[in-house]
Image (cartoon, rainbow, N blue to C red):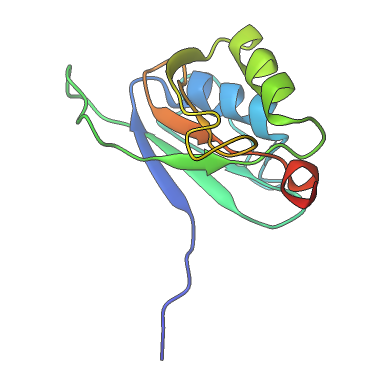
Length: 130
């Protein structure tokens, strides 16, 4: 017997603000029976298509651990370059650019969310098929 992934947990300082940021970026929603609000110390969001959940939990430590979580995201509607531009407009910051690292049409871009959590933006399904 195996286990099933319930959700992904991310330690943070402001659970509500960070969950709102990721909702906008990923197109996730609040749980229908448990909406998030400012001041909530735990905020869960849901992908309405896949059912994947992210849980943001506030921790009291002034310094958060360096490796709290790492997400890889793939554009749903845009190509990599457009998605990176959009994410930067949403408040992400650039960390490292690995586009074309293994030749033309390969690679990814590493960004950070407003609290410094790093995530990688991969090529879109259309780019991979092309």
